[in-house]
Image 1 (cartoon, helix red, strand yellow):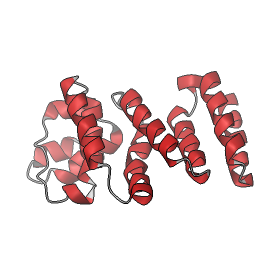
Image 2 (tube, helix red, strand yellow):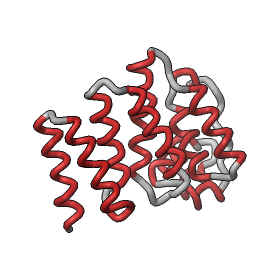
Image 3 (cartoon, one colour):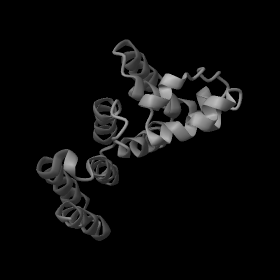
Image 4 (cartoon, helix red, strand yellow):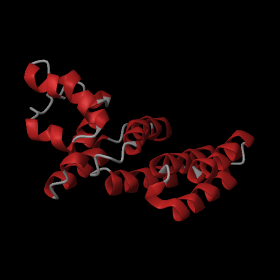
Length: 169
């Protein structure tokens, strides 16, 4: 596949430590291949390059925008990785977890009836230390229809009180 070969050029730039060129390359990759290529991974790599260059705010803005933009599509599986790494990176660079930001994003997703995005955010928020003691939502079978694969695994793990739902997830 041509897009796979094109993607590897960016990884070579990463191996060379040329993060500015890597970021620029993956931006052009996104413009050329859009959703046909490894879109979410290219976004993650742009953010990684921004982080390596010390531009943490640009990385976080990029990830926040793409989480909202892609997060409601259950087939956009790469966004789950971004949603896992974003809180860790935010904590590393700001000394606190992005709980208020993610709760605002969750509220917006629920208001806009973006169920897949809401489930993804619940999963990410549930992994934050500030949310460890908070009760989990009660999942419904309809949630399974809109969940990404990573969220399905999470629902299965977090639903022992709902064994039928856990098995279906």
